[in-house]
Length: 216
Image (cartoon, rainbow, N blue to C red; front, side, top):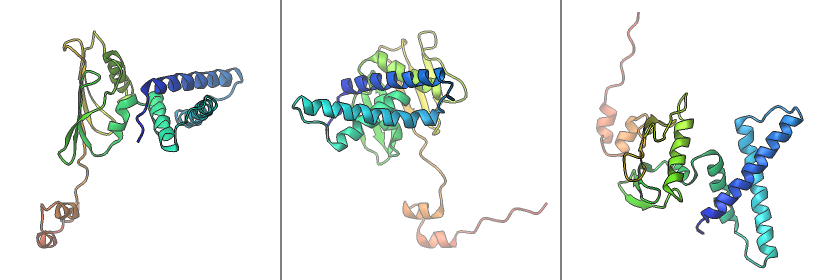
């Protein structure tokens, strides 16, 4: 798998953002109903695909090898995440096997997985300032109201939409730090307990059924 060039991602993101902003302007001038959030996301995917096609054509014309289909998909996802998500942090948030994320500065990233593995992750931002911006995005779009994260409010604690807990600090530490604890435990059924060895099949079948609610 080819590594994504994050400078290219930033360039593509800027180009896509400019084109989307221009479309918004044209819609407003023409009296067209503004795109919904989902419509804009879909439109952005089309814009990103066009930008990547133009880039591939330019690479071919310059005598260079264009990105293959898999790499193009990586770039498309990275640019879309940069526009609507939290950039390089988004794949970790989307991975159901990730249990804990600990970040101390943009390039000190440690990821804990559900199977017990703990690995050093890739940098989630180019600079600590960019990391702060990512945290600010999370604070702005989580919950019913925006949660500030700046020098006047150097600590942020919130629950993400998926139930995960986020804690971040800046200024009071040498580098901005971020911790995310994932909420992975959902409903547990007897079959799950048998599957993970907590119950044996015999004890599961002999467990009493839940009692019916009392009549009122």
